[in-house]
Image 1 (cartoon, rainbow, N blue to C red):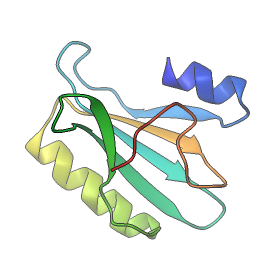
Image 2 (image 1 turned 45 degrees about the vertical axis):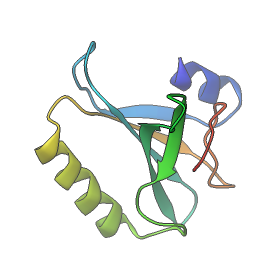
Image 3 (image 1 turned 90 degrees about the vertical axis):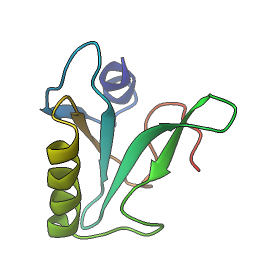
Image 4 (image 1 turned 135 degrees about the vertical axis):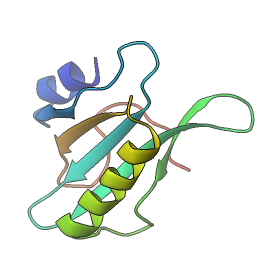
Amino acid sequence: MALRMGNSGGRFGAVLRKGDPDAGGVLVVLRNDKDVCVLSQMRSGAGELAWMRATGPGPVDDATADAYIARQVKFDPDLWVLEFEAPDMLPPFEAKLV
């Protein structure tokens, strides 16, 4: 659904890695011309779906993002990784960022 929302809004996305369809977590890579940010899916204290800027508050380079993703895949082999064009470094879907 996130891919359809992004594509319909002109923020094209792709699946970089397929995980388990039932149990896989999700990482979202946001990319503009030169910067990258990785969001990690989580639950807030109230149990609501939220997203954390997993690579830090600011954008990072490709190598840093790739290294983070590789570490997470070693920890969770069921992980999905989606990537979106994001000129403003915000996800193309409604997301609570923490």
